[in-house]
Image 1 (cartoon, helix red, strand yellow):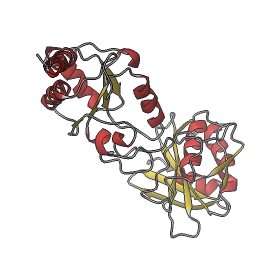
Image 2: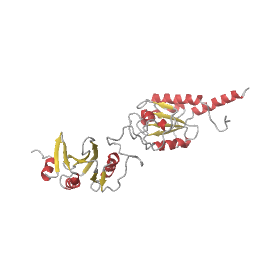
Image 3: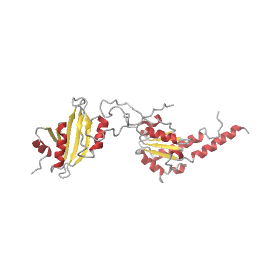
Image 4: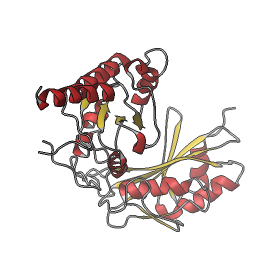
Length: 157
Length: 161
């Protein structure tokens, strides 16, 4: 039995564990938060996908959901919160304003949060429907499952 | 008998100071010089006209005019349910006007907003610093000559892969 098989299976198992235990930190600044709330509550209920636990400390979160307009004044706050999160971490950007500034093409608004932090899944819409939100979570889970997993004792190449 | 309009009363009382009055669909407006602003507001506030509320205070940038900025004050009378608008033209070179914070406390933040967005200096304001934009922001973003696509980020923008 080769070492490659164990590594692949370990990678798979860690990915499986991680994708169903996403603790998320809601960074909610604007009206897309309404869609977040309905997605989080009983009607659509994203706890079905294993990301129901909301943590209000970035240090305990795996996933940050950036929901709403990010102004230039707020950009350092978002960057700090992202830096405070422990690895591994993922970013979900929700809504047109977060992705590209949306209708706010002006002096005050960051034109897309990928100018500040790396984004894993983009959820377009103004605001996105809860179904879009759920679809994004499933897409993120696929990404987590298939990516190369990082962990503490991993041998570096 | 129909009630006399507040603009006409003011025009009779201060024929020199009030340059122009207008009324369109219930929007009574007086146009005055900036030196007369505080006296007029004290008069409107203390007399039985009772314009005791400052609803809003803002500025408009008419970039092509010589007297470029126009201050607009909206007053409301609780006694007579009247609204009054006061307009004052200011030139860009001499962008100063008396603060109304001694009369109305809510003028404090409104004037800070106008200072932030247009750069109008309010004399006698207790704490005239930017209200919305951050420290280090240059220029006044609601002026018409502020570049449309000019961004002043606080933290450096990362390079996208």
